[in-house]
Image (tube, rainbow, N blue to C red; front, side, top):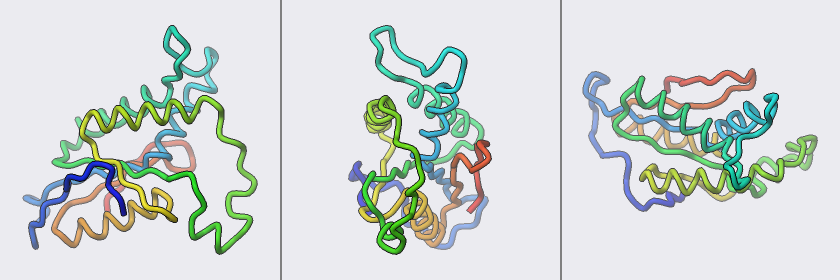
Length: 168
């Protein structure tokens, strides 16, 4: 797995109990980005944009949700996993995997790229892995961090459109 920020976000702490173990929030970046995009794209006024037309629905919705979760849970560490937008091991196993999905909206990509730049500027690590989706990366990270003694919670937009913070 690659971490676009080359800093560690998980100290090796051994067998800490949950009262003293650091809390790590792992975010399913694409899941929350799509939720944020469509929350505004389907509104009466349409997607959010700056006065010069730059799309901001993802940045606004994602960072608003992330800020609320950070304020509520007070984690010591946060990291965001994203898909790389390339075929994964699931595509190799099943040629029809995600075959029926609609094309990504044209203004989604620049908004997502702006979000990733904002996260980097905020020193929030972005984690990706070639051949894997964000949820696969999150599962691996959660397992590794738990083994190191961290409490892990995952922030994701689940299928019914609700946001959830899931305990490990």
